[in-house]
Length: 286
Length: 309
View 1 (cartoon, one colour):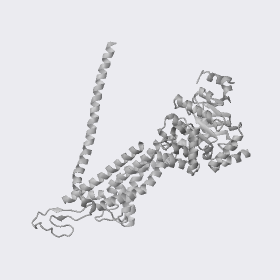
View 2 (view 1 turned 180 degrees about the horizontal axis):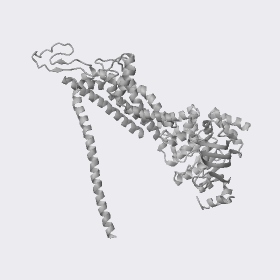
View 3 (view 1 turned 135 degrees about the vertical axis):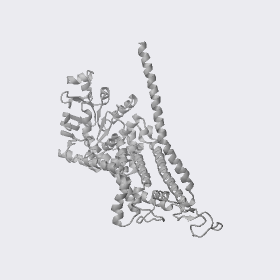
View 4 (view 1 turned 120 degrees about the vertical axis):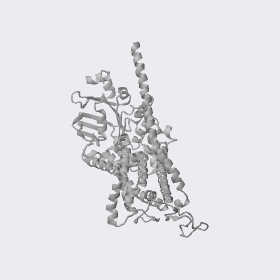
């Protein structure tokens, strides 16, 4: 525990330190990056997540699947504390990143979010130029060197497979792009600061099939460099892009989300251990 | 079966007639609403436009003199007889009013912009508490308050203690009027900024003040500027608060700590004058005020159109 604490400290040092921390964590591939132990989440008195246990492996793609209302988005957003501003929302139990409690007393959510980036359901670029959108996170981290910012922006746009489409109009507003391009811009914006974890909340649900395919290719490409957690309604998508899959369900009585089964995607899809998983995967409900 | 269709056609015909009548009513009501507006604009343009000349913009107050007397020297003008009709005319202009209005209103804008915008950000971006609700209520009451009340407050709080009417007192009174307007428009505009944008900035690890300044406010900037310009136009046209705070001045004065002139006050004074020539000056100032408001509105439209594109 004490070792992980010191390891997470460099995130206070801004961009360079974050990159260094990433390089260190890369060496320890195969370990659990994010771990939930008896994790509960409440909206006021309503229990939205009940006794979640989960170990999301580092450098892999983990999909959270399940029918609507099963709490998969709540769990995803709990990982970078996006609920902090929701009145009454609070967590119980343990949720850790690199062994450090995410809901610990002295954790600064701002520093946490610099390690855990997020891509949303609807593309949400800022009303700024394409360049400034991608540079935003770097500037948040305090990067002032324009040459370095330029390098990072190009790097991120290349990784997001968007560079060739926008390199001649980096000054056009981000909102002038098509929906699929906007979503890739948002991914570029997220990975520009090289977070350790990228959360994706149904990143393709507002997109057409071709754009969806491009995003899926992109996820496959980012695999290994980032720990990716993706929430999706689309089981085929989970099967296509993820290494591990977590299946969640809502308890019909308490309406709280529960973890039914978690395992390697291939195993969960071909040989599920829980009959409810099998029923869901074979289309019996949800 | 046939019967049902017959009935439906009847219903349809009746509905389309009702539709026509209602449309006629709305057009009529719109026309009634527009007629006075057009009349006012035409009246001010015709009468006010006729009052404009070079002196109007470059000269200050001149006392009315009988026809044939040079107002500058008080001597008879060569060539006009003593027996000319004793008609009285005024010459001169309203430069002092233009200067006063601009100085007082711009100063008021400088006071109220930071206060109003920050208050608007507070109301829109921070979670609702009873305190927020109270502030919002105060803003609504204050922006609906009769402007003479604001004048009385300015008179009692600033003019009385300081012992003198002053431009600065007028600016402060106008600030009372403009702050709630700017705060509320800023709040409304900020609330239109989609939450997704705030979440995106939050997920990038931006602290709240940073995302507000770099993402939320820039997204809403057009609207905020619009609100500020409209508040400026409203302040420039106010008469009652200024009457009780800057009093008016017949001379050109740049001293913000003494009585100043303003266009609405000049309109008010000149339109009551027994001298037709001074009445004409009143129409002229009305014209200038109207052009100011019109110009500001046009500016708003042009800037918003340009930014939208």
